[in-house]
Amino acid sequence: MMDIVNQIKELDNVKVTVQRENRIFVDVDKDRVIGTLYSLKLMGFHQLSVQNAVDWIKEGEFEVFYVLYSHQYKVNVIVRTRVDRDNPIMETAEKIYPSAHTWEREITEMFGIKFKGNDESGKPFILENWKEIPPLRKDFDSVKYCNEHFVFRHSEEGNE
Amino acid sequence: MVIEKVLMAVGAPLIAFAIGLSFIMLKRKVVPRIQRRYGPPVIQPIYDVLKLLLKEENISHGIIFSLGPIIAVAGSILAVFFIPMGGWNMLSGSADLIALLYIMAIGSLGMALGAGDSANPNASIGISRALTLMFGYDLPLVIIVISVALYYNTTSLPDIIAAQAHGNWTAWALPLAAIVGFIVVYGALGEHPFDIITAPHEVATGPMVEYGGKHLGLLMINHAFHIYLEIALFVDLFLGGGSNLLEFYVKMFVVFFIMIFFDSVFPRFRIDDAVRFYWKWPAIIALVNLVIVLVR
Amino acid sequence: MEKMTEEQVRTIANMLRKRSLWMIHYCTGCGAMELPPTMTSRYDMERFGMSPYVTPRQCDILLVTGYLNVKTLRRLITVYEQMLDPKYVIGFGSCTLNGGVYWDSYAVIKRLDRYIPVDVYIAGCMPRPEAVMSAFKHLMELIDSGKANGYKLYKKNLAYYKENQRKVLG
Picture 1 (cartoon, rainbow over the protein chains, first blue to last red):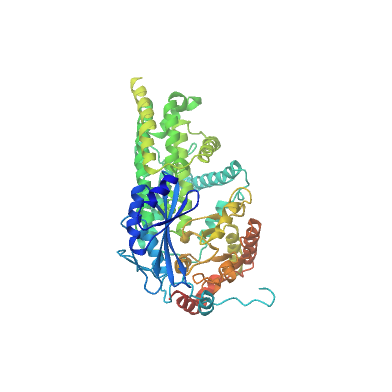
Picture 2 (picture 1 turned 90 degrees about the horizontal axis):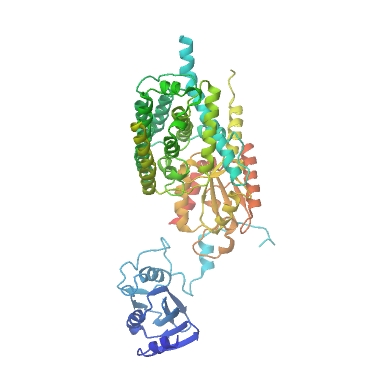
């Protein structure tokens, strides 16, 4: 596994952390992420397992991460970038990994991050007729939404 | 004379329906015992059919949709009159076997007409598979029927039954034809290796998908007639018919009982596998049998 | 043969209906895991005459097992309206009662009987097969005494149900 780590360290402007065996974290800037993904695919990481996002509300940023896996070396590599929270626009990874098309549709609906180049990114995917802010952001109050839109059953005191 | 004819005309479909119903009841008790559980009570099919006929609403997509089950039941009842039933030769005469092969196809074609009018793609897929399967098992069936007709030099069923009296059945004389006939009955009935027509997990019960209530009750009655038809034909051709009703019923009972055991252990063929199976080994065995009959 | 009164016909019809109920289980959520043990050899359900069928046109009971999204509710109402009278609905698990584990979720409906009339509820997360069978027995008793009237309530209060559905589905 260590020769893989050395090979990744030779790419420019990346920061490599090894958490434990077969799990490598790679941090890059927003503008270099597509180039890094392409180089990793040429190295043998052919499968994109998961692509999703995390909401760091106190730092005012979103973090988008890609989990790549190689069947040849049996190693997971996780590529992380940070995007500004007020105007989140990123490049699509659809041309390198075609399954990113669906992952990015879900991220746009749940977080509000737009992906340039993904033409179905704005269509409703799971929620239909949704009029509020994207629901997985941390400033969305789910209990308030439930009390406004749904009616609970009346139960006696002490049975809650 | 007239009384006897009226009795035959009314009694024959009723007896056929009762025999078919008893076989459905038998199957619903034996298959659960093979699977190590108790099944429903024995008269469960009667509860099912009566409940369906007592449903309060009825959805119909048009006249042709409602005509489908009616044509199917009418075709089956017509075919009942052409098969000798334990001593009663009703409309059987000469050139029986050829006429039967055509009349037995009326049921499927009637269902195809009705299922084509329902606005559901599952129905069209199901009925096209049913017709393809009929295309598959018709080849061995026709070869066997021709070889049996050549062996006895006649195509009328009462003569074939009379020639098999005193225990020299066709099954001992032409054993290969009997084996292929047994396999063809599975395909004609839609039993388990060839269950693709009304498979609930694949095509949402095929042509029956939009029928509910009274139409479905009619289709279940049709299934009872269909079981009687196929097994009666097999018993008449290969096991010597029956001189009275009791002997006929016992022979059919034994044949159906053996069929249940094969039915409950096999999974399902795909439709192209089923046609390929029918055109390979049963067709080759039937052709070998035909050559043996011609040479003799 | 004497003419049968309407009372006698209804008694016979109820006796027939309770002995051969056909169910369509609409596996909306994780509660559907408890149905294969109920149907197979150990807790045999077929000895009551119930068996699973696949299309709504042929069935009597709709089993709503588990949680229901807003997106699934739209399709479930179409399935319910396609079934033929008389029809019964059984709500499985505590997610149809009051939201269950997902009470604070933005996409799951909380009370099933504001949108569809329900006859019998089964509590539990997940209910064991013995609880499921006792619920079926309770439904059979309700049918026998003529109290399982969900389908008639749907037709009578159609405006109420439709308004609730429109409010939640948009």
